Image (cartoon, rainbow, N blue to C red; front, side, top):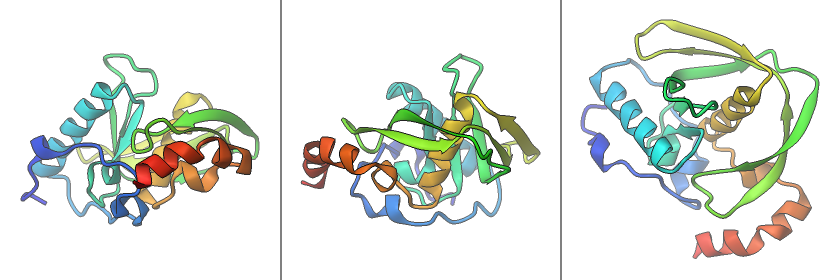
Length: 170
C-alpha cells in the first residue's frame, strides 16, 4: 500500500471500473492508509460532499470517510466497516454522488443502522444512528460493495437522469 501517492488521488467518475469492484479489506492501518484517508477527507471537503469511499479515488480498499454534519470536528474514517442491525423502517430521500456528478435520485434505505469498523488509531468503532449519518454510511458502504446509485434508482429516476449518465459514459 505504500507505493500510492496520496497527493495524486482524485475523485473518479462513473463508469470507471473500480467503482464496480467489491473492495478488498485493508490488511493493516499504517502511515500510507492514514495519508490516503487524510487526502480523502480533503477531497470530500473540496467537493462539498458528506462522504467519500476509497473506490471513488481509484483504490479498491474497504475504507470510507464521512462527515454528515459538515462540522469542522465531524470528519470520521471507517476502515473495514460492517453494517449491522438495519431498522425495518425505511425512508426515501434524494441522494447524489461525487462519482456521478449531475445525477440525483430518491433512494429508499433503512432509517437506522449500526456501523462497526476500525478507526485510524486501530481501535474498534461501533456507532448507531437513525439520522442522516445512517444514510451516509449506507451510501458509502454501497461503494465498497460495487453498488452505485444507478443500481438503487427507480425507473422514473433512471429516465430523469438518462442524459447525465450518458454524458458520463461518453
